Length: 332
Image 1: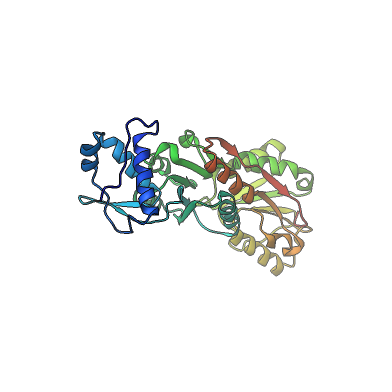
Image 2: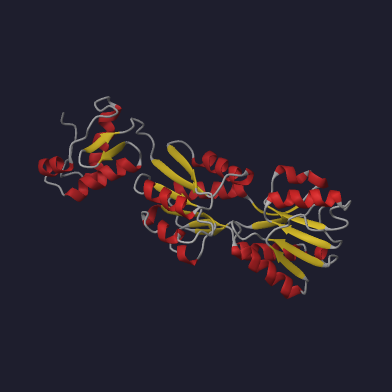
């Protein structure tokens, strides 16, 4: 069956004419799921066009999930959903309540005609590399949370350079890619500065920093603030049910540590916000009511998802810092 139509006198690029021919035939029912497309060589000979032209068309259809390739055999129809203009590879580090807010906001704002496939690397470099390798070339856009994984930049740079967006954390190795991210070093410094009047009544600031998932900039910004304003401070890798002393403030990136601190305070009959202070990272609805309110340092994850969607839809290549805020409550 001959269904590819290419006209030399059209201003439309030939690879786009091939894409349109395939889409039109699928829409009219002339090509069904699993059916084979003409080979690259056949189209080259029939229309006197280059292999690169046909390959560009087939690769675009592949990225959108309309066709797939079998090595040594050819290209086949994978899906008849031709209205999907973007297939997005979304690689998160993990899913938690605030990342879920980001994800839902992105889905809501990216609109129809977009398919989003979400994956998780769980801070595992080997899993990260495998997911990149297995999905390279199968999507129109790639959104990546590299966190602080060693070798992440090298893996990311194997992807189509114009189709990659960095999310949440970036670094100098990824400066060439558009991004919507948090500046953790600057954010913690500025947020502690906003709360300095409250912090002045405490004697010791303690950052619980395991260092596995947490951005290094968070630790650097904390130490810079304490040194600049003369606060006695500590950085500990785990809370581990240590004795809480009066006039201490705990800055807690991980909610598991937050639970441990609250439990220990109850055992010691200490009142949060009176005997000692707590600043938690990342706003959740529960932190508004736990212990009469937990002070948080948090970015707006819903806004991050909205900006990311706008960047994708408008093909913008900006690097945007998503600002952080100190939300003061009774725990400080």
